Length: 95
Image (cartoon, rainbow, N blue to C red; front, side):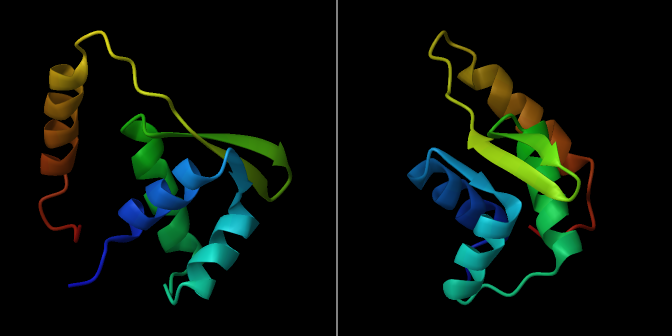
């Protein structure tokens, strides 16, 4: 079974303090993950909406990607519910 692109992105970003989108694409390609620019951008947007990463524009065409630290004040249940609602809004999308 293949590991979803979003999971691989979270692993790479968590392993490094900060990455650019070009560095992330190179790392994924080195691991044998084939993805288009559009697929990568969609995955980054999904992860940012879920609150797992933060994406900031550095310059035209360059983005900085950082992991968001989880808060430990009991918001895990709300986050899980929010994630389920978000995933349910795309019934025909592939994970």
